[in-house]
Length: 124
Picture (cartoon, rainbow, N blue to C red):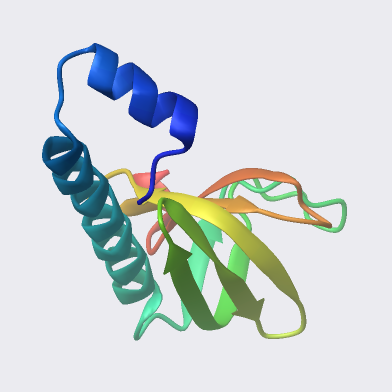
């Protein structure tokens, strides 16, 4: 089950049965998978994306990135993976779809923050 023991106890105290807690847990896991699929779909077929990432070597407000791939996996409510650009890559530690035009990834070491990505600069 997705929820830790304290959360399960709190949900039982709030009146949910074990079966209801299990159903909610399964819904969270499924929503996480759907989000990961939507994030990967966003990057699929795009050669270039724009971001609001601060980069020391770029003066652009929304720098351009050549994208090779986004590869994600899920575990319970965690989204993890790797975003590969043309000459570098970064671990992904979470993400969400903000709109049809913009997604946000939480990037790991070297970036350590949330970054919005769009196929068009104007969307940012």
